[in-house]
Image 1 (cartoon, rainbow, N blue to C red):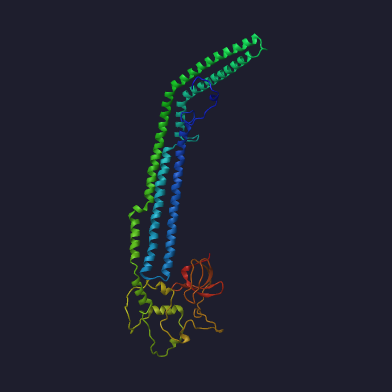
Image 2: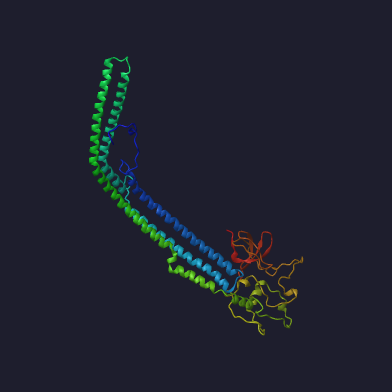
Length: 446
């Protein structure tokens, strides 16, 4: 702020400095921002908790669906158990993610909520007590200095106006000397105007410099008071920053499943289950239970009996096959003793039906019965009445035998008979085809 005049000095230059009047409001606004950031962090954690919950539910649904599909599918033996181990893994991981969701909401979310309530105190007239205290502190510290600054600005404006007037008066006097039309009295007035202008410049300059000195004298106290209020705001913000860091670390611990012993055990167990899969063992089991290693009722001479002429139904044959004891059979090759895939029926057996005896006579073939028109109908023996119910397919199913239906998930069909002991139902597609299907592959239409 020199005393020399410059036309450009009259243009106000904006400053972004903290020390400018009113620029402390950014520091005050930071307090309100702190409250909003607490809400943002809570919303962030809440959304993540919903994701964890949704993921856990998807894992559970996936595990349930595929466990049923694998158990009812053609896979068997140790490889089946290895495959099902993935579903067990999903169920256990699902539980862990539900625990993560609980930790995020019950611990982290609540902790932020309680801290926010303790740190920020709402006023009856709106806003927060902490914001108002900071605003009042800065305004009080800045008020004396702002008053002196206003005086300096006024003195500067007066001095610059005097300098401008002096320059204009000198210019007029200089031009009048070259004008012969002006009389001595007019020249004298111009000269007096120049003299008065110079005196005004000296007076305004003196006042300007004096006001600057007064402003400089109060500036140290102004800076000290502003620093004091600012430091209080800094301390408040430091508490929030440190708290956020603490909470984020706790969130990280809750999300990091790799440090949980049970999580590591899940995949250690999964790896062990997969490694126990033995192709040779499964092939031996299949040979013994579904291949050449099976027992067989080889044809023998039998006396005629009225019961032998009766055609067995599909259900009766399965019941009979479960209770047959075969004797006098010489086994060839390695006979492997291994339990069935399940306690009663293997997945392969669910799709295959083996009669207990064999005959090339049509009377002993459950699929050879004909109606009056000569058309084959494998369901002629099932005459028990049942109420028809409309059902909808939950999964895709491809019929494994001629008497089984095929459909896609979402297809609708009519259930003609209730589920039998083997888990099969008799139904009819909309195109009129009648056949069997797994009972748990459909649901009633409400």
